[in-house]
Image (cartoon, rainbow, N blue to C red; front, side, top):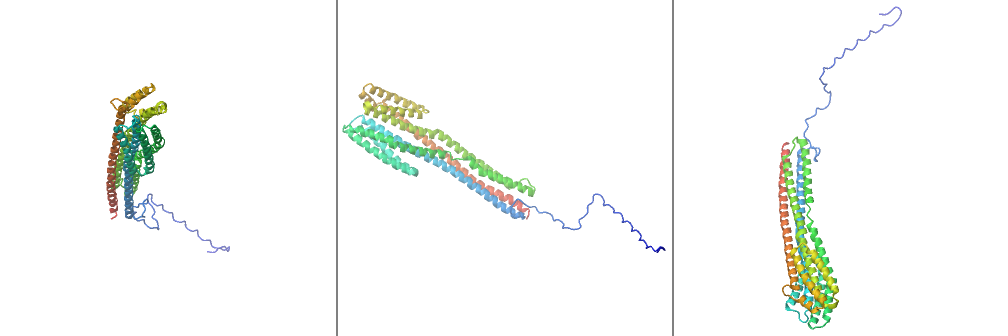
Length: 444
């Protein structure tokens, strides 16, 4: 209503808002908008192939099969290399034996020729036949060595030329000796000097090259390298099994575990075989191979000594240099056969007979010294020397044969391991396929 004072009517105050009732404790307010999440399908985020799990599993199965196949191929290749190393070791040992035989037969021929030269005139038929047989053996061994090792052919061609030159000079010496001409002694000394100055370095180079090849073959077996591919596969299978465990909530995939067990067993077996072959090779290298090499060298040094024994007498009063050469060869022989009691005793017996020859020569009995040197009776210097030479030849042949047999036996173990690796790869692939197919069926 209006007042009399002319003032306006005042509005009534607004009523207070009603109190807000709190929500009950423990309840939640539903969202007013937004999509409701669908149930999640297991995914393999670490696997390539997207969110389609069966497709990803199929792709990983193919990848694991490729991995196992590569493991098998690499392991077989490494085992094949080990097998080839064994064959190469045997071949290089045989070649080294041939070269050593060439050297020892050359010095054997020289020793026979110089000893026969002491007789004067026509040398005994037995010695002439032995000389011819030694040179014939040398020629046959040069041909065999050239066929066996192409890398040696150039050096062997040079060696063959020098051997022919030596034979021609020695033939001239023997022809003049039969006629009693003093120039024969000069031809003889020149032939022997050429043998040591020109031919021996070629032989030494061939021996060194083949020793290095054989040693390299002996050490070519690498068990750690053979084990490495298998270890890589096992680590990868273990990692992949963990990824599957996160997705499927199973700790182990039986197929992957089976494949890992097969790979592990064959890796251990291949490594063990390679290790055993390496151990056998090292044993052969330090044992029979060393025996063959050292005894061959001793045989050569012995024939060198025997040749110098005769050259000393041929030179009569000026043979001191040849006696020094004999002493040097004697020292080499003793060092090389120190581990063989029988050869040591045989050489010591010859050395005593040689000392008797030297004593007679230095005492003025040159003819008596020559008689002792050319005698072939039992207990003579030549008889005792021949006993040493023949025994050394037997030792070399037996040791070389044991090396070849040992390396061949190791090769068969490697072949078995390689075949086992191929079979294991097939089993591992089947196990992987079985394990992965079982997981894919869960989505069928």
